[in-house]
Image (cartoon, rainbow, N blue to C red):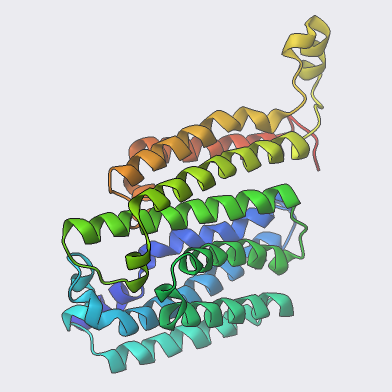
Length: 310
């Protein structure tokens, strides 16, 4: 039973929340209710869950000696000795083969994306995580590949403004993760990540601020250029009553929630609470409410008929 628990923990199922980025293309291309597209995206999501777990296991094998010195990571199954590296490596191989088998049900470009993700993450675990700045870029590339993997799965087009938004948010999250890790290493007087030696708190603060600003600005530009056109008579009536209350860019309604979420996440970063973004997103109530409201508004605006983008 302990071995089974360790096998589950080392796969980090909590981190699968990151793979929800795969659904972005389905939602923003207007194909959410197109027959077969949701099924393809779910398959893509499962494939990314499997391949990411494979990578997490390999990463833990690489990092086990240093994780034993970390105040939190020392409790991971491999670092703590609860799971033998040989068994973990076998589990990783099973996950990877399952990911490729699942991906083979979709387009060739999607399979290529899964393989590219795997290779890049292996290089990250063995080499790139030791190189400052490049490590943040590689972390961000994982989110970008997830989004484009979802697009390849259903052969969807993504707006360049949306791509800029994805890049900005990815770099924001990656910078915040490094900022939190630096704080923990300084507080506990231990450093298990070589790249952190080349970072200064002020530099990472500037990265977080820069990419946070870029994230909400790129989303704002996306809502400006990609919002649905007004269609229901209520919008026409509002326009006739007064030009001041004319609604032409419906998605811009979501901008305040994006700004709040970024401001809230930055607060958590500077409070040293964001080494694991997936835990923060799932446990911080204000952030959860903001993100949920954003999702509901986006779905309503794009699919309820109040606008006519698609």
